[in-house]
Length: 333
Image 1: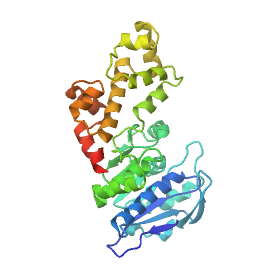
Image 2 (image 1 turned 90 degrees about the vertical axis):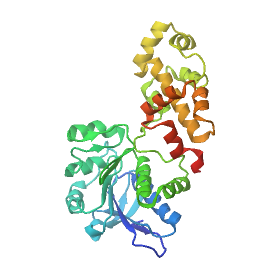
Image 3 (image 1 turned 135 degrees about the vertical axis):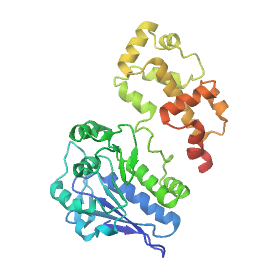
Image 4 (image 1 turned 90 degrees about the horizontal axis):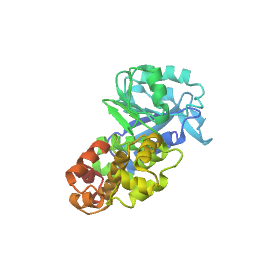
């Protein structure tokens, strides 16, 4: 696993180096590695040569206990590296012996066309000052720590990945795959990236600005005690019904005044905002899978008016429903 290249005569492959160490997250390494390797298979030539490196080379033990064979960093010529990525780690289990690795890494940072981190690898990359003043993504659990240690960095806590010029950073482990797909799209085109996503059985290739959490997951996190789980299920099944506060309060078996107060306290959202989010999530699913027109989707999800739906969708996802469908709808399958 130290070096993986596809075998087919072709232009000089782009050299991708993934920097690892003991206790690095396994998926941070293997996810992008698989994506770049599948890209080679898709285009039929060695578009990439991927090397997994560590300070001394040889076997490293990842956070899962699985050992990965690596190449020694000093065996890689800095000038040959196109993309260099730092794998992340669990902040509760700091990586072993990264100080000396960091000193060796310093000479590699100015050379690559792309420099980046996966997950909490941003905590290591930030130490070199290359993230100062930039918008950056990292795992949601490390956002506050990154802000505290490097206050000039503009951390985007919801982003899956962020491209700030030559600097790329991604959120939690699976988001490293999303970032790799975006790099593949930049290098080899949109169709290749979508084909790689399909080969990896990914539901869709998520845009970098999309939240680390779905609406459902975010509500589960906010409603930690699960007090309104049944209500949320009821809303999802009744999107075209009356979802006013009195109707929701009746469904929750509470008085309207008490319901509004308790719901806001428990979830952090007003009932109206929660309904809008759940309707918008339903819109997203239909845009991905259904052939219905935008107007029909607006009616099916309870928005009624497609302009009202568009405003809510842009507020949540940062793009219009039409754009989202063009990029992620079934016509791309």
